[in-house]
Image (tube, rainbow, N blue to C red; front, side):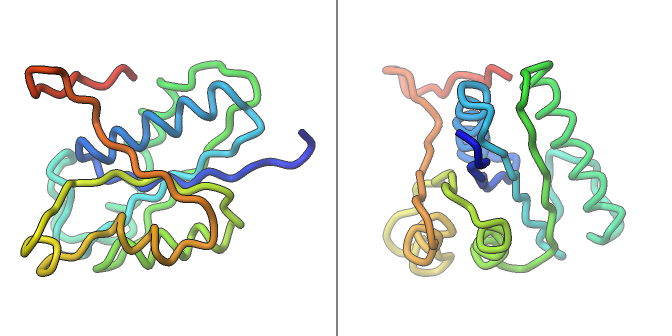
Amino acid sequence: MSEASHVVVAYDFSGSGRAALERAIGIVIRAPWHVLHVVCVLDPHFPFPALPKPDHVDVDYSNQVVAAITAELSAALGERAGASFYVHAPIGRKAAPKILEVAEQIGADLIIVGSNGLTGVERLLVGSTSERIVREAGCTVEVARPKRRSNGETPRATF
């Protein structure tokens, strides 16, 4: 295959985001002509609990997020020949439009998103990022969910 295939994955440090990232890493490891683009949308009012709390969300915080994700990806991909990735950390109140914007800019062939499993009134009030991306994307979208064991527990990530 001569042309790279661009895979966008939405990542927010949540369990469903981690499931999406694991799926995307699996694709890139098995098929190195895929270029991975991790999009982590930073809400200006709500920093990620997984990272040290900043005074405010700005370019410095964005750089911290990019560094944290880059470290995770580097560890997961190791020395895989040909595996390449980019981390995008745009700042915005709504994740779906930012993810779709990156996907359009790079000419994405696939978008992988997690699903938090919102139902009923919760979905009406909050909305669903994955649902909006499925409706509006200009390419194939895969919704990834964390695996569940028969006892209802979610196993820890392997990377």
